[in-house]
Image (cartoon, rainbow, N blue to C red; front, side):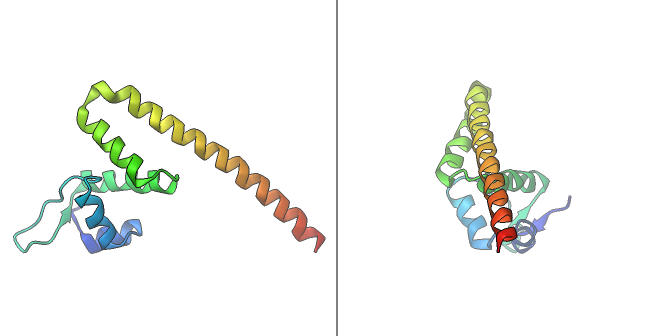
Length: 115
């Protein structure tokens, strides 16, 4: 991966540049290095970080919970269990949503065949 501009990153992850700036401002992503011209450049590590944030946001986790998660990461290895618990909880919620979506899909297919 190469360093990407904020425009490149916003296109890659389907986020608005303002969203990326907001995430940086609230500490959800670390401070993004800037080149001499003042433009942000996202290295491979930051891109992977953003990928994880996007994944967790798509799973339904709130920005506030993500900020808490980042704080746990910053506290180091002593919070590994708390982080694992948070991710397991989110995975369980996704599994529930998956079952609910499957049920809804089956119902819609049934109704579709009736009409």
